[in-house]
Image 1 (spheres, chains in turn red, purple):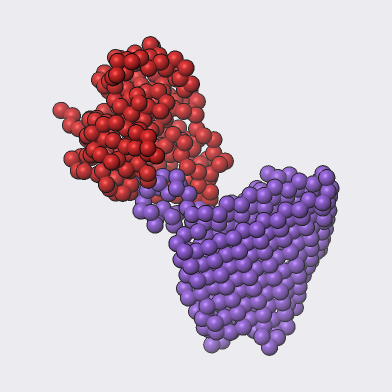
Image 2: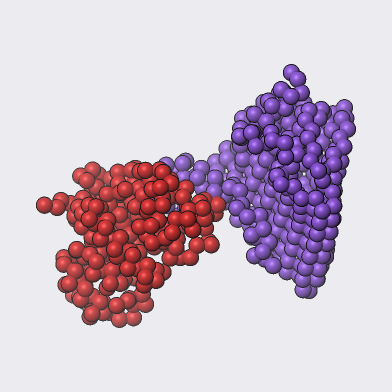
Length: 250
Length: 324
């Protein structure tokens, strides 16, 4: 039976006097794929930034437990060393830093062969990329896939994926779906933020966020109604109209 | 110590595999303080060297049409803790020649060493001349480095130079290169320097794109830690019709270090075009947290970002081709 790998309990975060997370509670189950959906400004990226412990995302209340250990005040790299990591929606570029070195920087196995393997897993040819720099000469999709490759090389226990589909073409998206399945088969837990029904359908469980709160959670079919109705009842009984949501994709 | 042993000591201090430098088809000039301790020429290369009281004056001629299988290796060094080394170089790369010089300057034990280079370099029409200079300094920074050069790049000629000082403590550097570039020539000047402790770095690279369709790129990447200081004044003047240029200065400051950049771009012809970018600051926070999310500490992440910034460009001609 699966157990909770990550537990978020009563998480509150305020930045510049604006309450962004309002008592978030969540259990992330080991070996499962979880999707977090919701309109822009719902707090999805804020939540994963807080889980990862990025600078400026220190909650004023609540706890984050990873494998039973309280990591709420832990530095980013300590969280990463314990097996928690984040793949960014728009990953940073590094002038002069070669792809091979970048991938192997946090890798469990620091051999060139491993770098080749993980590039292949994200659909990139090693001989074309290993000696390139992780800089602005890479397209958005290439950079994103290299980020994913570097994350896989870490052999993490839980991956937070912030919109893995944005900027990715259809062929590459199929690769990413297949990759998600493979990672799951290897027992890796995944939390994916998405605006895409296609990505949501890859998940085992889903959370619907709005206005800094989790409005609904459960099976994907029910949460997917968000995409069909373009609006949902919020916890205050009002209707949040998301029909003009610019990034909504079916 | 014999001159041969001294030369070997100098080469060993570079921390590289020196076997490929010892073969017969590699031209070599080795100068320790004011003595020429090794000289091996190959066809197409002429060298006349005079020992001065405090250094060496050398005339280097790369003959018309000469092409070399391997880079010419020059090694300058002062192995004792103190000393003055004045190098006066007169270099002429003659028409249609194609040469690359790999120069190592080694001061591994320096506490009070002064290395001055005064060079005039003339690159004749359609010649290609590349000069890569790598410095190896000791940990104490007790070295004053003053490389000053005036370079003439003839019509259709190509000049590229790279100055690298990323190992050891830089000490005091006052680097001044000035280029005059004729029609359809290409000039690329790169400097990559790491400053630590109380290092003081002054960098002034200047190029005048005089001829039509001449192109020039000046790039300097500097990383500073502790109390190191750097002032970068790069100047690009485009006066030839359709001349193209770009100045790029990036500096990372960590700790109490300080950096100042003054890029000057001057266009004197309506068809000329010059761009510049300068970025100075602490390590980019997104880069930092990306690497920390891979399990690297803040210090490890910073070092890796700096290593990338100071890494050798893979293709010297890339930027030149981009701006043309």
